[in-house]
Length: 111
Image 1: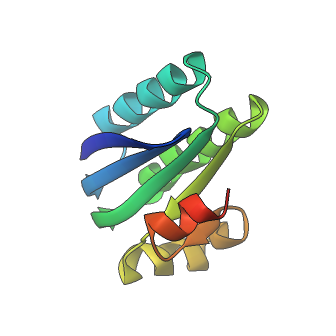
Image 2 (image 1 turned 30 degrees about the vertical axis):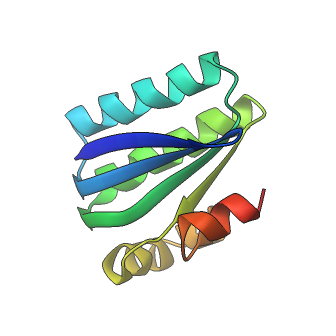
């Protein structure tokens, strides 16, 4: 998994690319989330548009990020999930817990 971030005003967009399968990816994303919270960046969009595969460990990474953000008064939204990832979110009912948008632009506009 590759992780890049970009800012849109006070909103941070984290672009994930590749496979989100847990392991070192979890550490990488958790460190990024904690760093953003330390910087008082409380609005985050995770763009899943370039994620090819995700498993239960990958979902756990997203759930942990959401919980961490909510506990610290922040908001975290998902954007651009591929049909495979969106199906996984639907099957696990996580699409009812996360705010999901078709694109990062739509997620940014929702803040």
